Length: 321
Image (cartoon, rainbow, N blue to C red; front, side):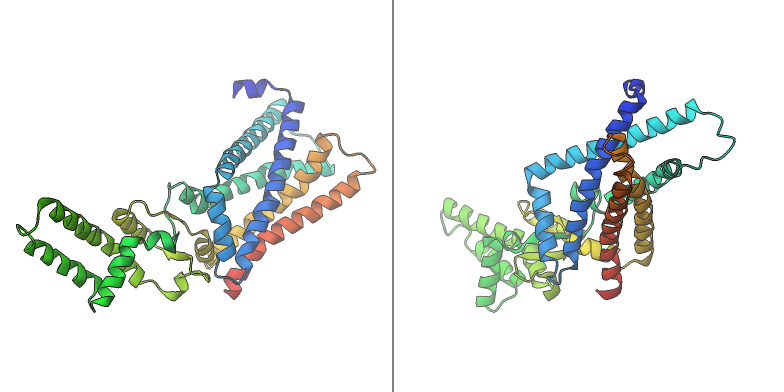
């Protein structure tokens, strides 16, 4: 931190501008991903996108880079704000009337609002992804319906028994085999029955699945609770169960308090982006008296597109889903 303080103010402004530009581009990508929620496909597109983002190694590396960029952007901004305050401990006698000054004054406050939003957002999504907090989950049908689980379902149905009755019958038969078969055969049957018993929680889960939990193509099981997740992982540790951000987002956007908080934060983001866009071009020396009005208009349009794109999702879910 001490080394960062020693860096010149101009250098830090250049770093903030470059990192801010990177984050502005990422917002456009994130907004496009969120708009997949609007598709009337039971979350198929959005779930596939989240699965790709959660399993691709390059995306995982990018997430680390993104977190580093975000953190460094915040640190640089805080440092330069504190340095400016230290350099001018007594305020101006008359308020500055320049447009840039007014925008700059808002940046720290809108930045604080955005930072608070990120904390909430991370708890609801990113921390669920990395396992720090719990949420709603999903899994591929084929990974839950293992060969052992399928065998219990099919054979119990063939004998007209419930899965529990079928496994119990096999356990009774195993006891009757004691001393009548060789040790190796006995061990094989014992292992087979043990696997049947282990598969029962998964079988019970599959039997209780509601139709709306299945994706349109039948490849995904949605809305798995944290309790079911633990039971499934205990029964079959190799099952891959991942966050179901589609239904998690839908549940959050049905909460009027969260929706109002979300929209208020994107109002703050609009003001932040409104100044940040043109400020970044100005800091990087890419503007002049001719281009400044054009860049300013582009910045306003970009801020509106991004913020309205993000706001559209909670409004659609809250009022129409």
